[in-house]
Image 1 (cartoon, helix red, strand yellow):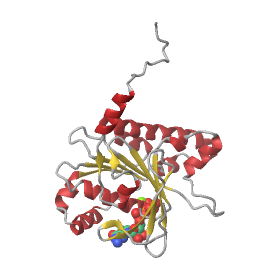
Image 2 (image 1 turned 30 degrees about the vertical axis):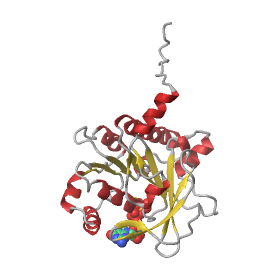
Image 3 (image 1 turned 90 degrees about the vertical axis):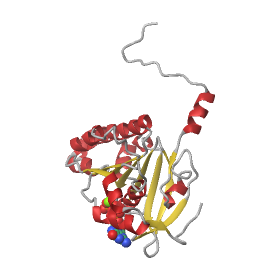
Image 4 (image 1 turned 60 degrees about the vertical axis):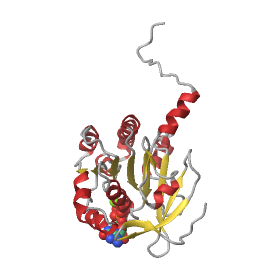
Length: 262
Ligand code: GTP
Ligand code: MG
């Protein structure tokens, strides 16, 4: 039967095939409390979002993960720094304190620092095939979009553009089996209602579902003293759990206590 132009025939697989494919999926261990929230490591085909307020430790988390992955011989990391807050000295410090070879770690982290959303989108196209990264990081995924699309009338084009970017990351992760971590700054709600990233809240109002663009989302908040809490939110795969951590000379490390509950 001839196909209409807007139709595409999807591939049909048996449930057995799907199960076998599922069992082949590898996980990237980060040796941080993040692993425990998401089944022991990041699935090689998935995108994780880490979100939280200013200064809560999102960049420190991705620095720690980047250093760990880059400590392995083929552990290339592609880091898209949308906020211009990449600090090679801090990566070096984390590597040294963890007993990794700092020069090797620094050499395996490839950093793009886009100046605008066009460069941010272009940074995805510039990911090298060789050496293929083991991990893709986008730090501050919404920052440049927020700076460029200002005002209510720009809300919808901003969401569309952001959604396209997120879809491309998801596609990249799935097709190349490269896990991705994106970070997203959110603002506190003065009225004490739950934290929802601005983009999602605006979209919820618009009746769209960017909320479901990313499956596994980890919310970071401050707890007592210097302790931070990482909480897995709305996952379809894993139980909702929390893990306390602290930011030290080794990057992020598990912490005692906090207000952990499962
Ligand atoms: P935004 O990008 O502004 O949204 O914040 P963020 O969530 O990325 O915060 P970031 O990861 O930059 O965390 C900032 C916090 O990390 C600071 O308040 C410090 O407590 C801690 N921090 C930053 N650098 C170091 C460092 O070199 N050593 C230690 N021990 N802590 C650090
Ligand atoms: Mg940051």
